Image (tube, rainbow, N blue to C red):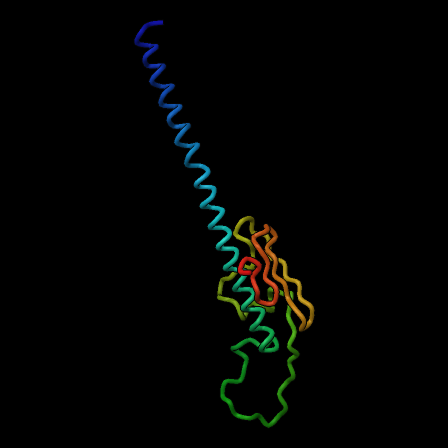
Length: 141
């Protein structure tokens, strides 16, 4: 092999190794940033669901748009709305921001909601980013 070919081959090898080292340093940082973003986004969505669940409970499941805002007494007896928690995302929809999707951003799997009458509710992320029990986040303890 000629001297020039060996020099070009060595230069190419050095460039490839340099790119490999740079990639080895940047890829873990990018993965960590993505993981932190997913964790933050998931927990924000879970907090919104928790707030919606608490509003659903406090209003007896009556959406704010249907509540009487006039403050006047009605001649007929108002309907009694039991104060219960719900496991239905559709029931929580009026209490959530428009366009909200109750899914984990990591893989678009739905959050899991357990509710027991008026006793308690639990919102769990299927990807392990935490849980909320009666409005108390597991990551804030």
